[in-house]
Length: 395
Image (cartoon, rainbow, N blue to C red; front, side, top):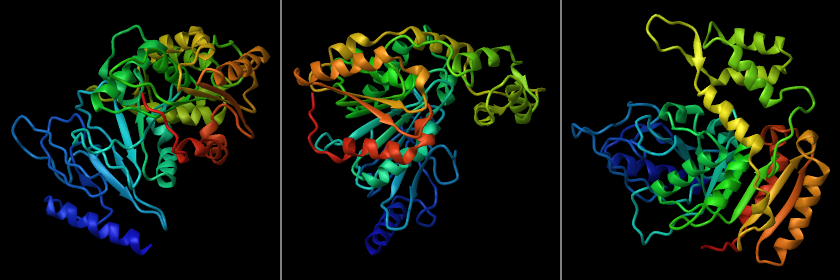
């Protein structure tokens, strides 16, 4: 604990030296990657300085846009976790957030002599957003302080929806966006973790990856199969049915409660109805009240259709050398997995092991499709060897 307190004092001194005020642990206004600002910020946790110039040469400081901040969170007997979110005015391919362990030293403008910390990219599912992964990513950063974790809003979702990406809106184009962001940030991810739709995006990234971006080493596909998605299921909360229901609703809703009531009336669970309210924002148009969607619903409908139809079995049958793909099946998510899917993955396990690659199947007990909320402890245990090991190959 004494060492942690020393880190707090040291970091605070660095902030004051750079011209920032406030107590250690406060939010410090710092322009983040891609902003049109010029800010100099020296931070011992990150070991770097950023420079972004505004049109008028001004410097954004404490009290400016809350999204342009660096947060240091102190947990008893735990290292700091630094969160670096983007500003709204970003020229990056996607909106993103970087969560860094205490020992992860990196910034976008960096000395090439400084080794890049290991990076994992976490990808959300359809109708989700990067916020779905924040708590879990912070836990990983606390346990593995040399790592950093990049969370993104995929196209048509969250803050990336405002970028108005051109179609087609598909698994492939979503993967291409993330690859473009990796190139812009000059990051080479060692691990990709994708949930549901994000799992297929992760596989498509490996399929498309080429120089100058190296292939990720470890790919975790959480509760998604490589092939076509079977329609239907247990009759509750099917994403295709949810999207169809949302498309029938008016573009503006009077209240969050009205959304919950409407979805509950259509047979969706209370948890899904409540979760969907997180995708609402106050209407901004003059003369309009109520709420509207943060996402591009029509684009998402196209993305989900692509998710159903995209077939990536060829990647699983011929995994590139040095790449390891882990499939995780949720115990209570039976309708997404056919017997032949499981058998084919097991067959791929045997083939890949003889070709310098890897495929492995896991089952997460006591979990439905929302694996990182249904059983976060179990998921954490399964992922731990991925971040604790040191035998990582690089391309």
